[in-house]
Image 1 (cartoon, rainbow, N blue to C red):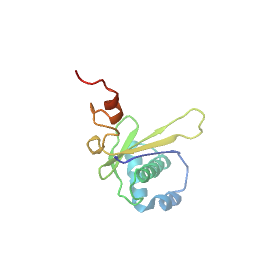
Image 2: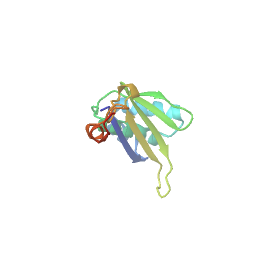
Image 3: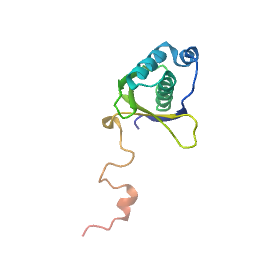
Image 4: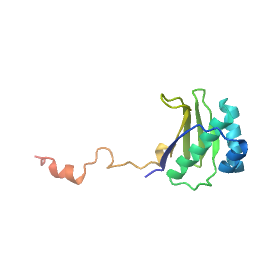
Length: 135
């Protein structure tokens, strides 16, 4: 199965030194780039990087896997990448939550994903056993 992982976290206000300790120097630098490209504050960008790393780990990557900014479309999403795995992140306002929530979803390209079940059109053993015999 292809790697798939997700994470959701509230945007947390932290001192720059705390974010640097959590994200490491490379992660903190990436958060600065995300903030500049996405036009958001350091806390929102750092939370995106944190969530992206968590989603990658849940998808089976090492916590130290390299992570880079791939795109920041104008629709509020920021796409990060680690090798062939893309991590889509977005910061959303959710009713009932004081702070915005960051959602990160890590997935491999469609070509790398194996089908979850039998190939399209292929019958399972049970389905084949239940089909009427051909005349």
